[in-house]
Figure 1 (cartoon, rainbow, N blue to C red):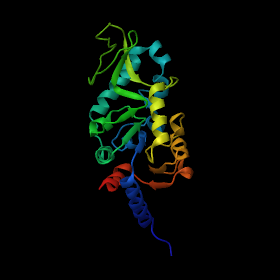
Figure 2: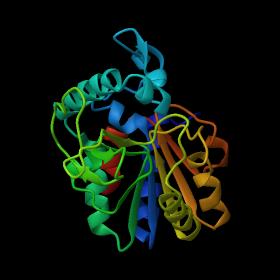
Figure 3: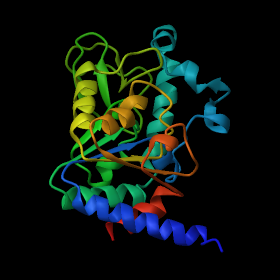
Length: 248
């Protein structure tokens, strides 16, 4: 006689909840899946087009150099869209989890800022932040929450052309941030992977780095991923439904 999947999930949730309760240093890695539950487009599959442009062709240094007005039109559209989207119970649960643990680091591949809006504080935004801009000339960075930045926004310090402070296709991740992420993975005792298939390096190496450092690794995704086989416990389902149960 087979136990139901629901029973198995209940046991997994209870087990993972206990591991989190005992965690001394927790690292959480989130990806597009957690924001997709709020309605943020993942830009894969059907979401991959914007006004008949392939999004992966717009989010590049080459596209910005060739047509900055077009790229800014796309990012103004994204700003407007995300300004109307609310953080979900998964974002909120992680903020609660941070308050209850002695050492908590949230590493996110998302640029939407929803984790911060939910109240998370110790965040490493490995791919940048949609609401931060960077000057193409003086390299100064600052937060600007404007829903619409205008056609060609200029730096308020030197007058140079601003760009979104996000990592575009073809660009390297910030070396110092990546070093912090790797050091955290090496020293955490529990890793939680949420809403990401971990297919793109170097972020994809984080679960293995954590496991090699002796960490217990859990995964919450809507389906199995390439890392599932090497993870200690995988719970299939929506993060917005599972995470609140873990912090209850």
